[in-house]
Image (cartoon, rainbow over all chains, first blue to last red; front, side, top):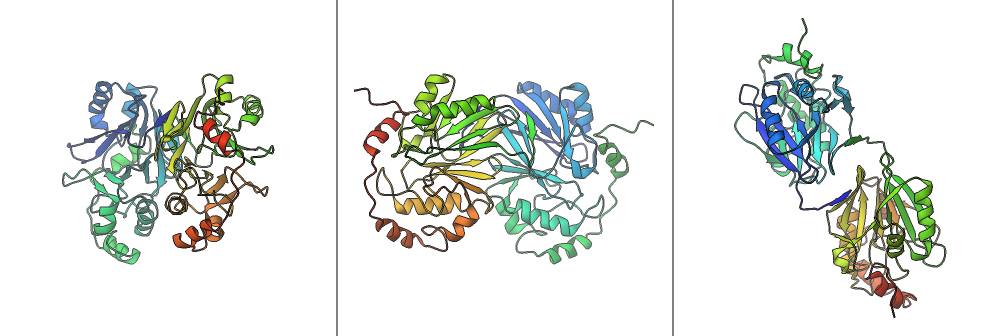
Length: 243
Length: 243
């Protein structure tokens, strides 16, 4: 119970996995109550993430995934082992296991701050994005990347769905909203809705759905190295194969 | 700390003052935590309001005014006497006294629910509207009424400002957002942004700012009966004249 001022930003720390997946993990917190969440934690980076939580004096409430990743194993299972009160969250549409599942329009509350869930399928069927309560930023997962987007050729991917997701759920946000993606492979850390709307070479600059479908069909991408290990583990909230 | 589901409405009770001011007071609450707020309470209706709070088993956190009213004395002073932990809230732009003041973009949090403050001057300089966290409804005070609007000829009123407020801050909400005004004189209880945008005879249906200014200048309204008593009291959070 408080008044969150218009100019009071959510605490945010962007953490990078340099060991191979190039994943951005986001630590977000209420600067007053110190309650925090981790979005898209990576299994090999859990110790770093918990050190950040401890150094900032935060209480870890939720470990959240934007989708069942194909390129790394989520850290939520290991985080739960070390912080037994933390609950894991993923979209119901992902069909993956977690303590709690969410759907479009749900609001994940930590302290007096919250993230609004936006359903953004297309890279996978269960992809969601998370919009900050003040619309100052959006965590886009693999739906919208900086000057790019996630591939659409496996895990129920669909170029048509991804185009519709990005245009209806993300490009409708204020142009000033910062875009924080789940990956970048060129050391870029952020973009904005306005910049992607204008110049994303696949989805912006007036590109039509037909243009996008054609671009995605012509990509000819390699089979993801870790997909056969990562996806089954991530469907179990990061629990490794027991055999 | 919870997940507020997309289909989980805020608790809402609309209460009418039939003793003369035709004011709608709104009791809003978090159905999980039972924390509540009262918006635009009227001095002569405070006992009724508190009975509702008690019967529903709620905890009254904030007593909030959309503006310094000219037609009735706010109930916030009497509410504070009976519920000492309740804090009163009004906009800083109103220049009225209250425990807490708010400005555009601030979020008033009660339990896991919240109202976003939208600055909507024009009826008075300090008028604000309150948008529900899920944008399902907006409390418009006297800025936007059902098929009408507040007058703009006293208390720093300005037809130009009111037109800009309604178009930029209210008509930009989803068409489905329910409009709950601070008054109705014809027993109507609610409208929607879509309906007002389409057919409000002063502000909707394609009316321009020039049209609106001309309409408001031609109204030739009577001097408000209670303004000389109500406004000074409301500038003190409803504390009556001590002389």
